[in-house]
Image 1 (cartoon, one colour):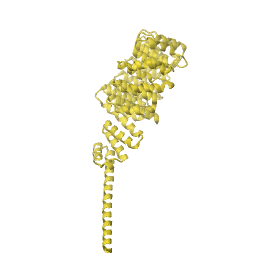
Image 2 (tube, rainbow, N blue to C red; image 1 turned 180 degrees about the vertical axis):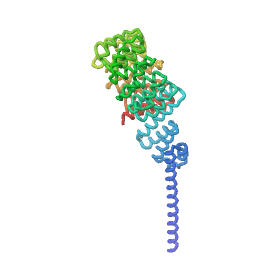
Image 3 (cartoon, rainbow, N blue to C red; image 1 turned 30 degrees about the horizontal axis):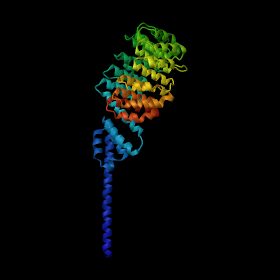
Image 4 (tube, rainbow, N blue to C red; image 1 turned 90 degrees about the vertical axis):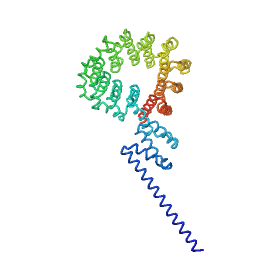
Length: 453
């Protein structure tokens, strides 16, 4: 009996040793596989890394770091939708956002559209990148300077112009030779914001450019560099008979001189060309004087809706003045629904109680015109602090709209109104069926991430 017991114990020990050795071998093999996948990822062998990840058993693949690695692999392969689905599953496990990883997912939804065949989609992508205002966007924006569309190249140039590092980019400065006036204008405005005096030699030749908007941008850039020649030319252009030249100069002068440009704005407010009157109306929003209130009240009755919209926006911006009386009158008298939307925005910015405007807001929310619903979503973003909570609810309700342009306006307005509190609806936007909506949501998430940092 005693020998039998000893033999049984020996057998148990042998079995334990064998099983332990097998387990160690399996674990070692798993660790080896994981290391191999990481190596493939580091070597940019993303398709092979994904294939190896899919071969792992459920327990190994379920490790949090491997889940994150798979998401990043899918992003590198240009599969943001699949990466987002895996990200959602990861968040269900860890019960909190992984903001760094979410930022990578958001960027992928933007970048994937930079190579889209549709100019409009590329425009959406580069709009998001230029608004991001991060040095991480510079390589993408530089690539955008090679786009076949002048409009897209201009968006890329505007993005680089906002960043000091972008303004130092050789490719950005070389874009002064671009065929499109919009691109050259954007580059000149960026060089004007730079403190680098060496840029003056690049700017001065553009004073002779055949395109009027380029000449005005060159004058503005020189004025910012404290060159009297540029300032004098800019003021001269602010009174020019050419509407395009005059409008471009007035926008620059308002930014540079503020209230000192009041006489030029007064003249422009009575110009026969509606575009000039509209520029004047926008300019008066930066001149909080009783005279500005009087002129904007007149422009709020202009024959053309775009001028009235500009006047409504500027009336809302006036500080230290009660601009509500003319806006209240317009809410009942103006026949254009889009104008009424921006009148509501002006009133909310001036502190009018939200419940006083609720009937008008509900009426516009139910209109059949997508342009009106879009205008309302944009206008509600102008609400003052006391109105923001109610405005958020009204904007959020428009997110179920069937038109992508409305949902895009909602995402932008929610980010403006609610800041990081808009994270939930922006993540919903990443799941949208429309490419432009997803890219817009991604862009707003990137911008908010920049604010958080």
